[in-house]
Length: 143
Image (cartoon, rainbow, N blue to C red; front, side, top):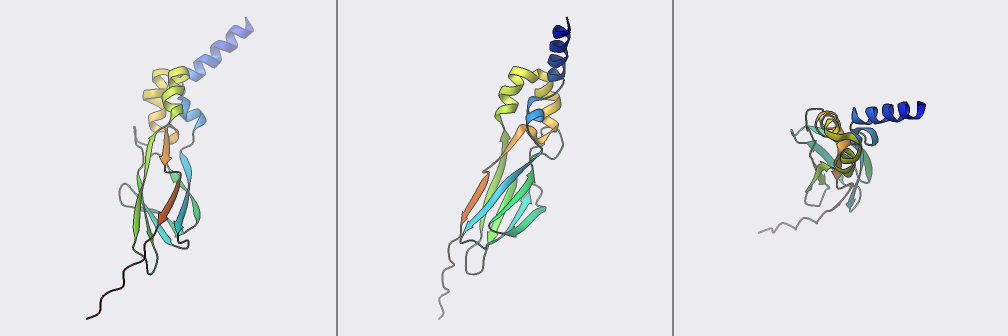
């Protein structure tokens, strides 16, 4: 009897939470690298607001969701260094396997449509590591 009650309680608690929210986090670490190293970088969110800046190599933490319903975050990271042309790379978020398969097995509709869409745990930021290759600026022609 006690085992049946425990099994029911575990099942109900899993059904009332989203699988990605259980195993995922609302932020993710991204490694920021460039060739050559020592480049400055600025990361802007999808609203154009600068959320992080520094010098390569670095490891930074980015939010995966803005907290709204299905509010995944997108970023652009711009690298610059004297004598080199600037490079901008996207960082995009996509639904991860825990959201898709985990809710299929454990979380059900509540996880898919009520819990996980508000939590960044359902997303994975890609790429997890940026490697910008900066090209030297051409020498200006003097006439």
